[in-house]
Length: 318
Ligand SMILES: [Zn+2]
Image (tube, rainbow, N blue to C red; front, top):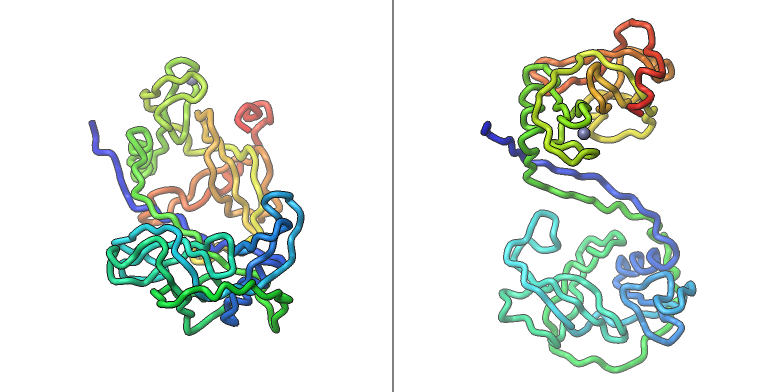
């Protein structure tokens, strides 16, 4: 059995969302050291607030200000903080019901160890020094000696100067990725600038890239089949959105990303099309891979100059 590849894989992108009136008031409030909740039809105060009543599904806009002190309702110890977590020392994840609220907010508690945490303990907000209108404006919670005063939360207009209306949330997933036997063989062949798929012993389809099994027949594929290097654009899209990773590679928008059926393959793979104006790319365009020095996969595909492929030759590959 040849060695199966393994490598770190990070999927990371900034997620931009608009906030709407309730979340905008909540996050802008945090910037101003004010914690807002929302009152539901049956009089409960939800913190963090939501836009719709969880019982009646009615829109709710009745904002109230709750205290920056509260009670831990449950917790879990995190002995090894990861990158971008609120604290870089071990901490407790806590659900905190703030005084005046009926629901609990997820955040972190700064204490020396798990023996310093208990359900029912009193805590208060530690505000971040630099606040931007984000949940991280609460740096963390910290232990607090003091009872709730029992007062009802006061109504709040939710109006602030210069409200926060959108936030950018970084999403990041990091894996150790193991592609398995079939894709390891595919990747190793690519390093020699060969594209090798696998044929299904039952339906005879050649899968590129191979997944190790035929999804139609449910049987393992093992027979290696070299395909390409030329192929046919089966379908494509024009990309108009700039992304950091393409900009870093010197790829300007608009550009074309296409499904390409390599000659001999029964599955289209995808790649960027270059060497032709984006608005002249078409279904049936014949292309070939362009490799860069040291590249482990084709940088892009360019037109070969052949006559376009007949639709009937690739209509089953769309
Ligand atoms: Zn099959």
